[in-house]
Length: 198
Image 1 (cartoon, rainbow, N blue to C red):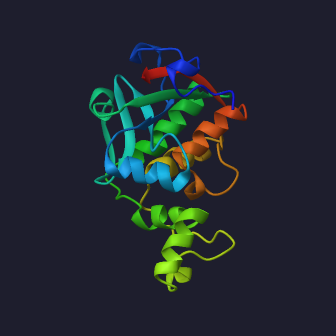
Image 2 (cartoon, rainbow, N blue to C red; image 1 turned 90 degrees about the horizontal axis):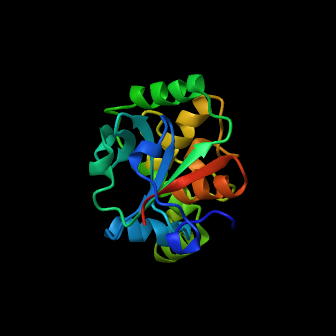
């Protein structure tokens, strides 16, 4: 994969001044939930957010969709990498932010994140060994649990981009994980901007 995720792999350190509105930031942290997400997805990142300009981000966290300062959002990050869509324009960036802004105060999509975890073979195998009823939740064929009024982090990012005519995942937005955003960079849809935290 040509995308650098650590400075040792060729990443470029940047400050917030290098960011543009609607840039995507993916992060990881030492918290247990971050470790669990990375284990479930096989990824190196566990969270995604949208840069809203003026030192602010919009993100879906367990309290719901919020707008807060970038410094607070990155306070516990051990890795933070910024990406930009190859076809981003000021009008599309405004559309991304409008969509994300409208979701503020909406809840967190616990069902969606559970459905996404259930699609990971390593997670589904363990859960279904423990409880055969899991197939009600994690059906073969990629059936997802979704609440259109709630979002998990990468689902919010993907849906905001889709609403602006810049889809970053092939399937529905609730199939997006933070790691699929990294893969979108590797495939050329997103451009690596730099590391905010290394």
